[in-house]
Image (cartoon, rainbow, N blue to C red; front, side, top):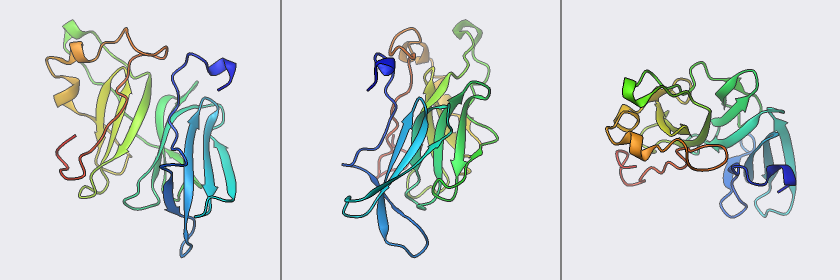
Amino acid sequence: MNKADRGRTPRKASSSKDATRAPHAAGAREHVMLMIGTRKGAFLIHGDQGRRTWRMDGPHFLGHIVNHVMLDQRNGNTMLAASKTGHLGPTIFRSTDLGRTWNEVPNPPRFGSLPEEWGQRAIDYTFSLTPGHPSEPGVWWAGTSPPGLFRSEDDGLTWAEVEGFNRHPMFPKWGAFNVGTPDGSMLQWITIDPRDAAHM
């Protein structure tokens, strides 16, 4: 960690311990890919099965803050990246060719209107991206800052609020907005129960 990043929210990256195995090209043997989000863009680190040789691909989104990069292992090709830029603000980019090309999604997560007593919220950034259950192809989940839960049913192209969470009567107590990391409070992790698509 360099001095400029001390005290800031760490970006998420897969480690060599739990690195994603993905097809490098059609018909090729599986390889290992590390997906690393940083304050200076995203990097994809490709290694062979033995993890003896490595190749760096990137930076993608140079100048963007990339909080999370995730591969959908249900199809082995679709990737989403949660990015924050100076001109676009918080958004999500999508790739369907294992990160070779990217396009901004047309409808990233956004809060709708809230009860007046709650005040209004605007997304500062998306922090967490999670593919849905294997029985629900095309479903993705996203967690944001301020804390919010969102669901996509079209492979990450458009997103809708999960109102049972975002508008729950207890939400003002769950989503404490003035505490947490120097980058603000957030919904940090989303875990889908592999035994039950309805259980998170």
